[in-house]
Length: 243
Image (cartoon, rainbow, N blue to C red; front, side, top):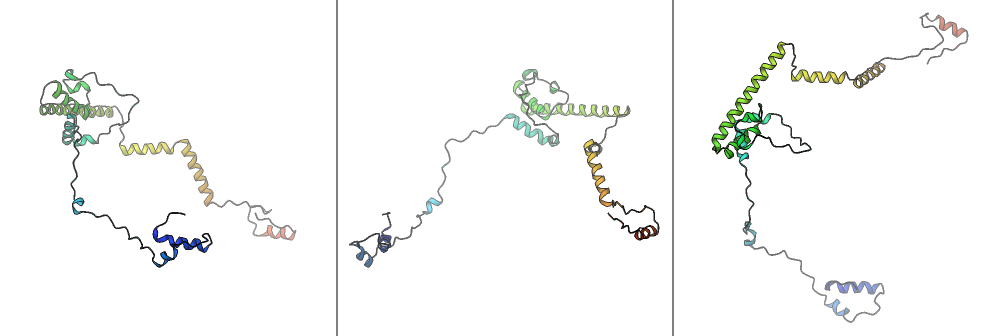
């Protein structure tokens, strides 16, 4: 027999006796019916003390070390002083191999222009840190010098680009704007063979959709005879065909 709760044993025995599974009545059956066991009390919720609700959390013994680099501090200050540099497009696509370090670094790097005539913000940040580490210059002076050289090289590059554009325009070159370039790309798409073929098919379908194409073969000529031809065929017993 399956184990039951004390208050359900006599009920289960009654059901078994009703189906003749138990032939003889147990000796305790009448006594249990007269004095049934007490039902189990409902399970009370656990007692919660007021102190356990507001217990203080024990802080961990080992805290992670704050990882900070000097380049992060310089980079943060650089973009605070030059916020529009963050809007310049930069490719973040990773190549198959890791790019090698520039050969000019360490104590040999004394001018920002050694990395190129158009330096990036990252070049300026690394140059300031390089001056501070390898040339024993305070970080404030190193940052001021790096920013000054960065601005000078950028100004030189902008002026050279402006004069190159003016010279090219003087020789007949045309530099379309972004809007004109967008329209040119759209024209190239529309002039493509696949696109032109699709447009031709669409125009043909549109013309067929709004033009009635009728094939008249009634046995009469295409000229208007004021009904004489129709009457003549009727007299001859020929029925016109309208298709």
